[in-house]
Length: 118
Image: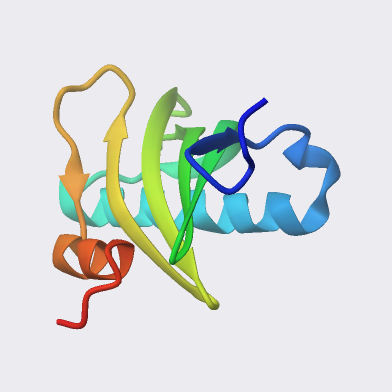
């Protein structure tokens, strides 16, 4: 078993933990809102499929989730979101299977990830 304080750790049974489910849902909702803004689309968050976390100077969530567009078609998305002391920041989001990532606040993301003072 991996040390829970290093590397990527799957988040199991997040549906049964209201705090964890709320964090993941809020993170995925923010990610799809940023994706919509950058891509001029209109997707709405539906549900979390899976998530892993990475403990750094905060927590980085790697989330796979579903979102529905105006035509009610569901698509699967992947997002990386940093949570630190109540602050939530989307680093990147893409539709699963796409080679194109939408990057957000990258400089700030890496500054926090590596604990840099920029």
